[in-house]
Amino acid sequence: MVATDYQDIAVEVSGQIGIVKFNRPDFLNAFGGRLLPETINAFRELNEDPDTVFTVLTGEGRFFSAGWDMRNDNSFPFGPFKTDADAKIAHSNHLFPCLELVRTIIDHSKIFVLAFNGPAVGGGAAWFLGLADTILAADSCHLQAPFSSLALVPENGSIRTLSHSLGIHRANDILIYGKRVTAQQLHTWGTVSELFPTTGFLSHVKLFLEKQLDDNDAKSMMVAKKLQATALRNERLLAAEIYKENSRTSGEERETVEALKEDSSLDWARVDEPRSSVTELQCLTKKWRR
Image (cartoon, rainbow, N blue to C red; front, side, top):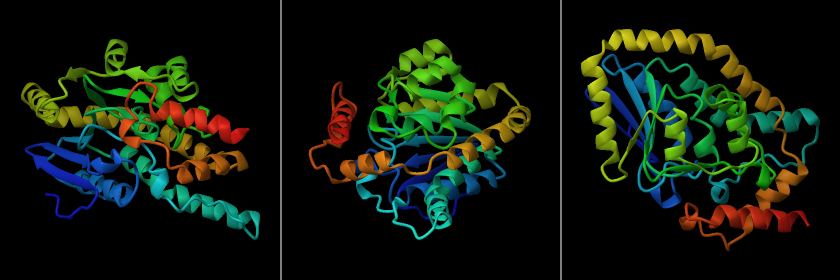
């Protein structure tokens, strides 16, 4: 039973299925406000629920997540700092909520179902894909993680976890080169188990998982998940730690972030349209570098 009241996520339990839903649709479910700490807490609560087998992560509205909410994040550790130690501590503190969410998911005992209800961009595309036990997607979904074109880097060990899940070359296409990938492509690759219509997507997800519960023994499924996750745990945690040690904010990244935060011409409501805000971000980044 989930007892906590949440502001930026919604949580429900339907039989043996726990559902965590990003609930900032006006911000395309970007990672801001209370979303990260609330998601961590929800996964912990569901982990202790004796009745659930599946934990589903999805989004409210037309987007799964647009990634980091750069417009509303004033916590970037740009300094100036008195010592290098001060800089490292500030940077570690800034990364902690993101890394703690990843660690919480890595250690989650329930079967983690990633349910892409719509497009996922940046961290929304990168953070969870390589950690999920099962991936379901709406037919309107696509993923894009244009880190390199924005002078940023893939976060929280995602370059390694995605390589393990998709293979090195496909992961590089997505995370290094920013390739836009559709749900249909992911389904063809075998990454997405099932595609469902966008309309009524969550109902389709519940029906799919209820069928798995009807056809399979719940305890056996959870033990199988544990056997796999335990073998991968140290590698996944190490990937996140390596990211932390190699992601000290560079001067170029600082310029990119500050310019993105200050620019008022970007229309995030169009970020899922072809040649829309993702392309605009890339063009603006090139302009700022000049």
